[in-house]
Image (cartoon, rainbow, N blue to C red; front, side, top):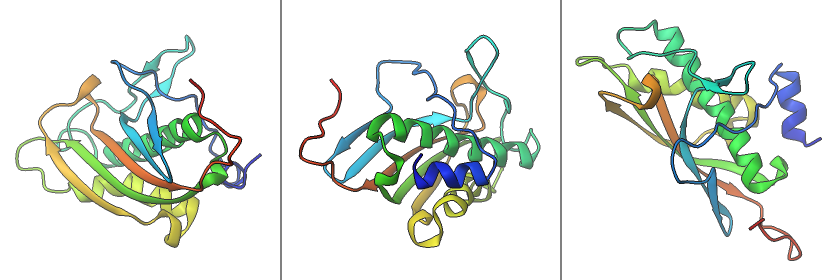
Length: 168
């Protein structure tokens, strides 16, 4: 078990499987020491193995706490996607950047605070030096499956050993 997975266990978090793609894309792409992680939303897996959105709606309509929780869940899903791409989570060096799209009602102005649901998770998991990152929080008037937030991210990883090659 990786140190990051040990930390997740201390936090009481079980890493889910990566969310199922809704179109023709992959969880992420590793290029040298950078991994570009696809955008995803805060889904959970139901008893039938299907993804569902536990916090549907627009910021400004749903409780702030639900939107924040969706952002945190999105970060947990991203971690699962990262593991799928890089294998050993201990290869993660740091979170470089996140771009969040907040499904918000006109006039809603607290997108950065919703985005903190993901940012706070990364700092709690990895610490200030590795978890803190550059970011943007953008407003949208609609997102897939009525999610309150979608996030894409960029991370830095340790290089693969010479004998390691990504799965084809």
